[in-house]
Amino acid sequence: MQKVLVNDKGIAWITCDHCKHTSSVDLSESSGVVNVIEYKCSKCEAVYEVTCEFRKTYRKEVSLHGTFIQQQPMEEQAGRIEITDLSKTGIKFRTRVKYDLKPGYILKLTFTLDDRNKTLVDQMAEVKWVNGQTVGGTFIHQDQWTQKKLGFYFMS
Ligand SMILES: [Zn+2]
Image (cartoon, rainbow, N blue to C red; front, side):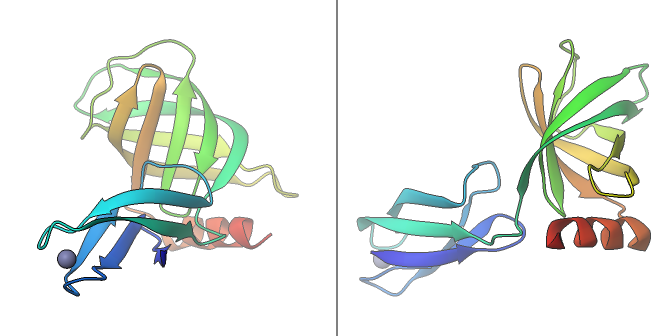
């Protein structure tokens, strides 16, 4: 079985065994360290299973508490969140109650890491998907300080 590595953005590049055509698969919403997917080549339509391996530092299951404040569109939505999944480039969290959040919304997230210094992170995120009270987002406008802090966090 073909084995590929998933990059930081959650994308795996798969080269077809039959026709050598290469295309990408978006796995940014799947969880777990290894995912076996059924891949269908977009060119020759051959179907086979591919093992997709996430980098060890790709994401971390966490239980962190924080808050969100909606920035765009301008609406007064804000509340407490529990972060269940964190990576250097994105986040998954649960809100206490259901909010009217949609893909494309921009949120300001503030949360404390469970590291020794209880590092406070302020980070803007764009909502990518919403499933009830669970929201997935990608970090945007990340400053160097936050990049460094998250970098350290994922090394420990
Ligand atoms: Zn093919």
